[in-house]
Image (cartoon, rainbow, N blue to C red):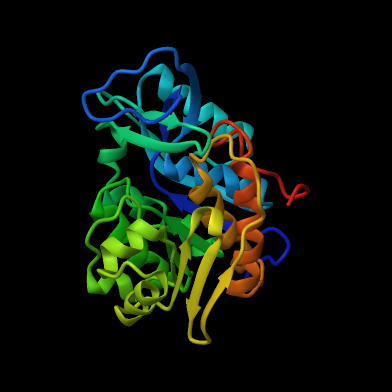
Length: 299
């Protein structure tokens, strides 16, 4: 641990602009709904986690790609305003920046999300290798699956080589190699992702199966029910505060970032998970994935 006060976190992943429509309820296939309110927010799982980690008190560097367009330039400017190092947030000529179309439905504010093909899909193993110096100086690396598999595998390998804990939020869920799983310090899926990866609908059983696949620790987010932590000490659940949700987009990203910053700061996995649940519970009470991320003093 290089700094227990302000850990250095490298976040590798996607950046999107979220185009959000609020609906009375989520539409069924083939159904149109009129009258929804529209908003534009900065998003993308990687960029969301970078902002959340910075607001949690970490020194953050972001590794990713954006297009040569206003969406990309705005995304980079937004990260810089949060004090995030964007040297390795590369511009791609001829590529569009990431766009996510999001529907929010009903009082529960459940969501449907579609993400367009973009510069996020161009993040390469070479891009990650170019950031090896950052990774070597960091206290933790956090990655997701909205970028190509080769980039994720390279990030895990470099983190292992540098002796840096590698955290993976496996979203969207896809098959993970045994080699990658063995390099994961903590896997952070939600319930549906845990089921897809393990074949088990029960979160506790899913967590045990995933640990059996090689990763050291598993933390499953359970939405309004909090989180489940599984490590060598066993399984425990952490309840979430009761709140009135406004926007659930980015809640999982908030949790992942606060968990990683907590562990990198010297907290136990359970202590970091407790703080991450509190942070995510605050995030869902606000609109916007990045703009809704809470700050250290609030949590």
